[in-house]
Image (cartoon, rainbow, N blue to C red):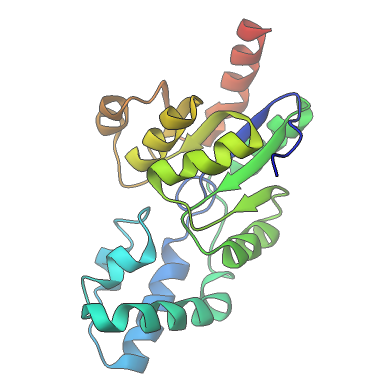
Amino acid sequence: MTKNPAPFTVGFDLDMTLIDSRPGIKAVYDELAAETGVFIDSALAVTRLGPPLEEELAHWFPAERIVAVGERYRELYPAHAIAPTPAMPGAIDAVAAVAAAGGRPVVVTAKYGPNAALHLAHVGIDADVRGWLWAEAKAEALLEYGASIYVGDHIGDVRGARLAGAVSVAVSTGPCDEAELRAAGADVVLADLTGFPAWLASYSSAVA
């Protein structure tokens, strides 16, 4: 069922957009490696966050083990990944700026939804969550929620925003630099979310 739109809706990616999930994800990979006896270069893995977990696991495990290992990863995740993971600079204020302007924030992420919700609760961000959506698939939730803006750190986020007809606001806090984000079609590139409230105020005035 299509949700009734707020005056406007802003979507946010999660990993490396709203939260710095590298310490927590590294801890889970280290625990997974210890359990399975399979080497995982966790320091390398956390430099390429964004795509679905299964794409990273494929670097370390044979295809027939990925489903089971992915399930175990998600089981380990709450105990090892939530507490070490902080909000990114400006993230809390960015989401609050949407609500203060009368809009609705929604988090659209490739992460498993229940674990994404644990992260948001831990850092004190109040938003709806749609999980397990990557790149162009994110357009599904953005269209469902009627999002006019989508904020993310990866070229996959840019592609999802463009497919949904949303303004793509990119932050260069993840694995993709400004040049990559602009080449992918981002409408706006910010160094981080500390600049988002001012950008949102300017954008809202321009389209009012």
